[in-house]
Length: 77
Image (cartoon, rainbow, N blue to C red; front, side):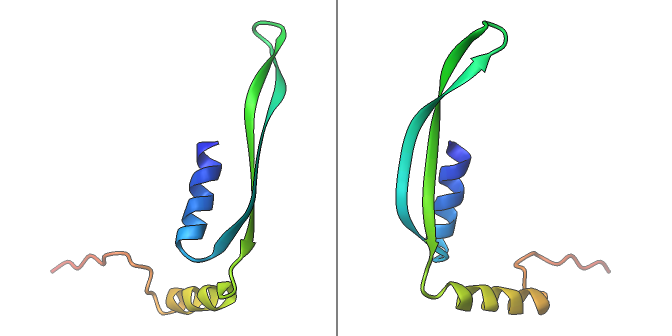
C-alpha cells in the first residue's frame, strides 16, 4: 500500500496527475503456513492526466535530450 500511495503522491506533486478516486478493501489470501485465509488490505487509486501533462512530458524529454538530468557531473584533473 505504501508504494502505491508514494507513487500517486509523486505524480500529483509533480503536476502530472490528478486524483479521481480512491478505493480500499480487503482480500482473502490463503496463508500456506497456517492453511487458512488471511485478510489483507487492498488500495486502488485512480489517477487522471493533468491538463498540462503532455507539455510537462515534452519538456522533460527535451531536457533529457540535452543532458539536463539533474545529476552532478564529476570532473577529474
